Image 1: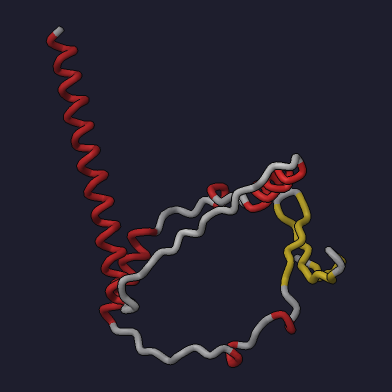
Image 2: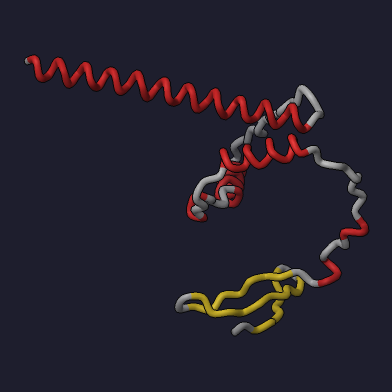
Length: 148
């Protein structure tokens, strides 16, 4: 069961769906038809995806996939903005954050995917090595404690 409704927010009419969720009623904003771009308006180049690229992409997605936890995502923009506003209100000069540009050595998707996978593997190997060292340290400590 759901209802469609509108209200005015920031001098703009908003369209949304009212629906029950647990023990409350929520309003989920949806877009008007004229706000949605038609895919025919987009100029997307036609490209054939090579099977090896697709396999590599799927592998990358599987490696990076994990159980989704919405609570891990926080909207920090408003919090940071309020800190800037408060600092400026106190007359402090606010430093502009520096942008970090990630340069890509190649435009070839396959090479980028390979690089990403190898970086993930390197990180995993470093982590496994670190765990192995810690395990050895713990075993040595246990052994020395038993000897005492």
